[in-house]
Image 1: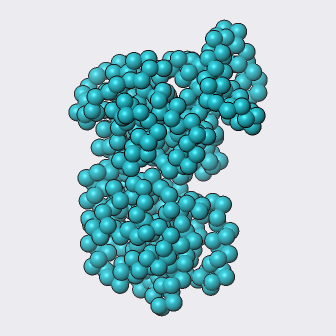
Image 2: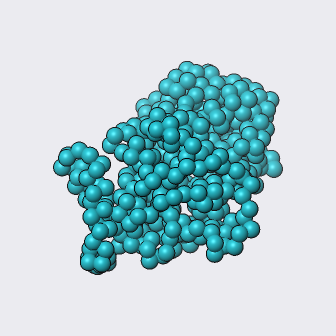
Image 3: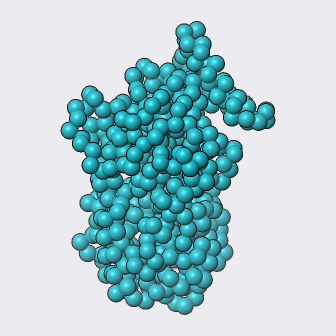
Length: 429
């Protein structure tokens, strides 16, 4: 697959082109729909509203039963092709058909897998499974008459897409978020994926810098910064927050080590020792939940901390509307959508000086940023907001302005659509 040169992306692409002339794009996702990745849904629907023909494929089924999906999610789930949802008979039938009618497709897929290197038996077993998924993916794209494959994230889901593109001869592109992809670059074969991609979208300048580390400078013109966004009309300040004596602090994110919730509980303990009237609501679920709940119980925080578990988008937004301060003490991030949502609602945020977060929040202007891992610094920043309603208001207003200017979902989807138009118009396969 040949590297595709592109010029600098312009947001002024003419979208008046007839829909039938727009490229038909397959979106490959690891799990769709998913609570932790609601931006997938917004992105797909936004592109479709701009006339793009998007078909979605997910490796895994939705993260919730059908009755817990929102109406929009349920509609998307009905039209999404689920690779792991293919029954055994359907899988065998597809693979036999491909083998008999397109043996070169199978050979190209196997060749691409072997070229990824290492003769580790464990890894080769998984590559075999990826080849099977890649053949199913390509056969589905052929049935749907799709022109191009776009993949979110650079891990295993991109390995399936990489193999499918090589086996079937499709062009592909990536949206890279970080940081998980960069933890084991060799294992995820990032250099190879970046090399062969027609173009790569990065959600921040920091993310692009990490992609540059594993790309030739000749490829850098194919790396485009396209931030995510939120709907500022949906996430807007409530008409008035209820006046209560207890300040409501909220944190939204998966309960995993990278999100740093243990540091947040430690900071809460320090603040409660100073007799501040505060209450923390933790929204999200994950492997660390039992550990965090046990810590809260052992340190007598249970009356001051509520673990809500995973909530859907509407429920989370309702909780944000009742909150005074938002805290995300992450150790590793891309550019958190959860922060954007809180900022759009004029909730003052405290977060950490890592990765792409300083691009979203200028410290002391649109929020307060502290060193990751420091419960002392986190507690001090939270204390400043607890003590000053004026500071909370000042930061909240500036935060919403930043979202309106730089992370407005509608505007950023239009930029994404323009990037797709221009990159796909210039690609050479």
